Image (tube, rainbow, N blue to C red):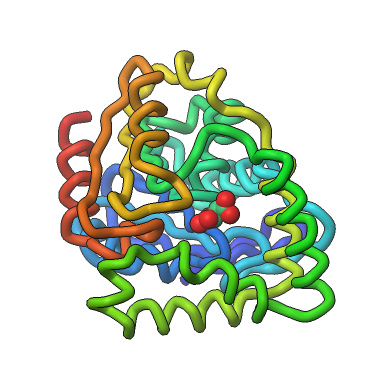
Amino acid sequence: MKKIDLDGLTMNVIDQGKGKPILFVHGFPLDHRMWREQRASFSAEYRVIIPDLRGFGESDVTSGTVSMAKFADDLDKMLAKLHVVEPVVYCGLSMGGYIAWEFVRRHPERLEALIVCNSKALPDSEDTRQTRHHSAVELRNNGTDNVVFAMMPKMFGMTTREKNPGLVEEFRQIMLDSNPEGMAAAQLGMADRIDATTLLADIKIPTLMIAGEEDIISPVMEMREIANAMPHGHFAEIPGVGHLSPLENPVAVNDAIRKFIEQL
Ligand code: MLT
């Protein structure tokens, strides 16, 4: 673990291994631990960089709203502090995918390829936006309990909930232990995110979309449409997993990632 100073904000980051850098960006409300199976599998051959985003894990928390652009700029500064000069393979899940679109807009020179797991390109509907605003108030007033309770049924697929309750419980606890202010600030940032569908045709780098068969937050069809809208879009569907595919079926997800990176 490294602690990096980003203009007064301390960011926690794993930087392990040598070779082509792969940047893994976690979803909401998680931290570097959601990528543990990818860290174990890829750090022998690649340089694996896994931060805790601002407000999550062991990184500092800032209040207010943290926009997807702000997260993307943090990642750019973090890479500079780690002396990463070559373009990276960016791999983000869900909110990590929303941040990916901003990273493409703001720091394209840093990218060799993109992997987006269980995410969306569309902005929130008005209903979802309102729910996020209520959730931010709830988090600030009462902590994480109710918000995590509402999210849990959507995070893991039915198969994982039946076959691997230990994993579900472990990550429920990680979500409950997240910082409520960090979560609230990211919720408001997600609510404000802009439409990325208009960007897709201009993404010229190879991009792999990884969908979960049982994911009800980011349905397979929507993920396939994103891949189809990109000139170099690839698509993989992981059977028997929900929204947290890299944890639910790491073998299949790692195979898809490895195959994609080896073709670059
Ligand atoms: C995530 O996994 O990052 C969240 O489901 C994203 C969201 O709330 O839209």
